[in-house]
Length: 317
Image (cartoon, rainbow, N blue to C red; front, side, top):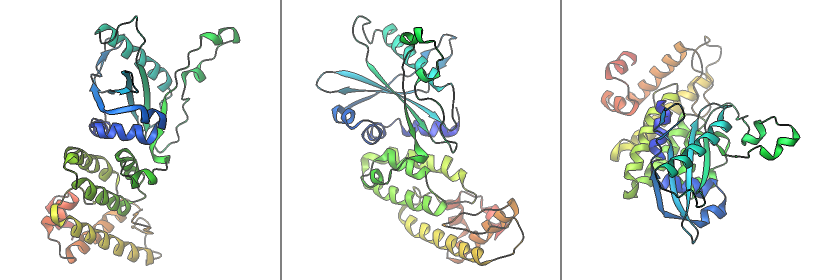
């Protein structure tokens, strides 16, 4: 399992995240009928036909409506299109029902619980995979009756409009919005705003730590330059973030005015995007670090914000 998948699974191990996913992205009638106080994480380890265990599935159950109808939510994390997804979803659902019967959680003579399969997709390439196995089966007309229909819900994170949900503090939407950030400045500003809100709710402390880990281990690694983690820094965080953004934008303006420089230098920063070759990125990084130092930040503070070793910082400034 990739590290980014692991971070995702940690975040969606919190009931609030799953509840907000249902509220924000599933049928409103379904959300209205769910009793979110009954959300419970289920054991996702079941055995496939070749005896390989799947221990990382995120499966929850929740009561729905007046009757105790159990709804299982199966979430698959993908960063690129998987053309076997329709078959995988159908297989997982069958295995899950089979496991529930085998472990006597349900009685096979009674109706099976509904399963809501969800695919969270955050890849840059558009998702072009059929969202129902029925569309992948080439059957002659006499066999159409026997072609199964097993749709799944695709949540294409990078192409969603989530601004309205962010404003009402839907945490799943906030996560997707962070991933949609156009550059480091927007990413830091959004993260800082989210952190300020989460700090005020003691019940979100553990989830805030997981958001911090996701930011540091996934989002920060996608940037061309070192950036501060807006979920770490204590009482001085706001000042440090402001100094970093001011230094970064100042560097962007300087680079934007520099024309005709050698190819590979950092140039054309629009809202904080540095492009160019490795040499240019290193030069741009050194300038930013120098501006952070001139703004009154010590090498130790810069190291804490950027995650860079102090020795490396000293070698660049």
